[in-house]
Each structure stands twice: as C-alpha cells, then as structure tokens.
Image (cartoon, rainbow, N blue to C red):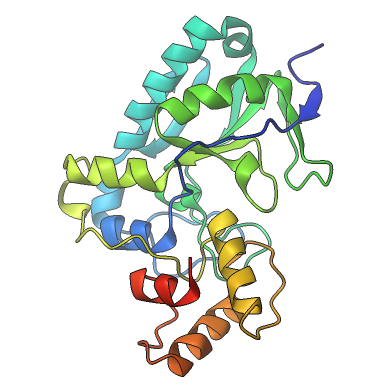
Length: 255
C-alpha cells in the first residue's frame, strides 16, 4: 500500500490535546490583523510580524511564527528518524495565511498566526472534508509524532482536515508560559469555548444546549447560532450573557 493511499482515520487521535481555541490565540498572541476574509492577507500586528520567520526544515520551506517553526523542526527530525519514507515525500501547501477558516464567516484560521501547516505527500494533497473519514496512510503514520510534540491533527475536526496540523491549545499555553511570544503574550485566559472554535468539545456543548430546548445542528462549529444559544442559556440561568463558555457555564450545562 502506498503512503498516499487512503485509509480510515485511526481511533483515539489527538490524545489529551485540543485544537487551539480562538480566545487563547487572541488573548496570548493578539489578532494578526484587523479584518479577515477567505483569501490570505498580510499580518499587520507589529509584534507578530517581528516573530515571523522563513526556514528550511528537512524537505519543507515554511514561513510561520518562530516558536512554531522551532517546534516543527523537532517534529520533522523525529519523522526523519522514525518514518524516513514519509519524510522523503513530505511537502507543504502552506503555513502562514491570515484568513478565515474555509466555509466560516467567523472563525479565524490558525494559519493566520503562522502556527499551523498543511502537508502534502508526494505532491498530493489530502482533500478537506472527506465524507468517508479517510486520510492518507503516511499522514496517519506521522500524526502520533506531531501529537507527541503538542500538535493537534486536523483529522479530529468536525469537517475532516487531515492535511492540517496546528499547535494545540495546550502547546500554545506552554509556549506562552515559557515566554516564547515575547511582548506579544497577554494574560493567560481560563480554558473557554467561544465563537470561532470548533471540535468535539463544541459538539458536546451543542448537544447539551439541545437537551435544554435549543435546536442546533451538532456540527462542532461554534458559529453565530451557537453563540446566540449560549447567550440565551446564560441569561435564563443567571450567568453573565457573554457567549463565552467558561467554568460556570460549563458547570450549569453539566459539561
């Protein structure tokens, strides 16, 4: 079987890792720019711009946030040792790209901060949103290595995106606490869900809201409808109606 052949996405991916939450990224790194669209725009935030680097890492030439590039360098070195055949055919479809998540009008892609990378194998891109929930075999082989270094694999998104790897929420917080973001780091926020987030935690939130009378599509995407449902639930239950699912709102929902 070729490394680019499609196989089912393995179970139990991204152990103990969450996709980087929008509130975490905005609080600790700031917004890369003032407005976003579906196409790539330049980073205008002065501190983030000063942290951008271009580097050759094994077969990859990338531009991204310096701490992410240094972590990626460690990942690729381990791939070269543990999966040399995958290493030999790795390429990239991009790292830095300040834009919205594809198909979203509210969620900012983590490519905007230069903390995510899309990979190709032998020049072939694993297309996003495969209804059969499959991935290239080579990506499945290297995903555990990315996970070991604190990178979240996009195969775990509600809309499968297995070409995509990004620094996890846990890794972003770890780098912040180590001072890796220089003057760009803000106050460490409580782990919270807010508009723009996506993943299984958002799906569980939507299901909990539906059990309390809402009629959301449990798609794992925290968009305007989910935001409105959270605000309504908070207002009915004596919570601050800010649309942010922090510890008090999670407890009220039994999450």
